[in-house]
Image (cartoon, rainbow, N blue to C red; front, side, top):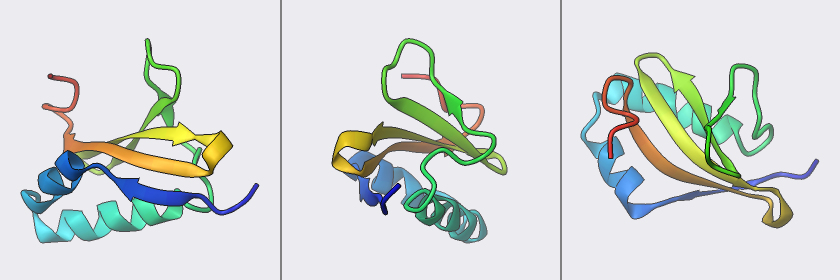
Length: 87
């Protein structure tokens, strides 16, 4: 398995700016770890989506698309667990 490239959607980067700095540091470490292991222990595949997964980082959830053919992890959403699955 090669090294995956991490790409942030603009909306996910914007959501990250609204989060507490200490939590942001933990989230960024977890996202960077996805470049070497895009399916870490505890990852969940989202129902109804072909390539979408989520990881838990404390009270926050990071939703991402895994495009293995392109070696790309695209961060789609970063939200508090109570707001994660709302549109």
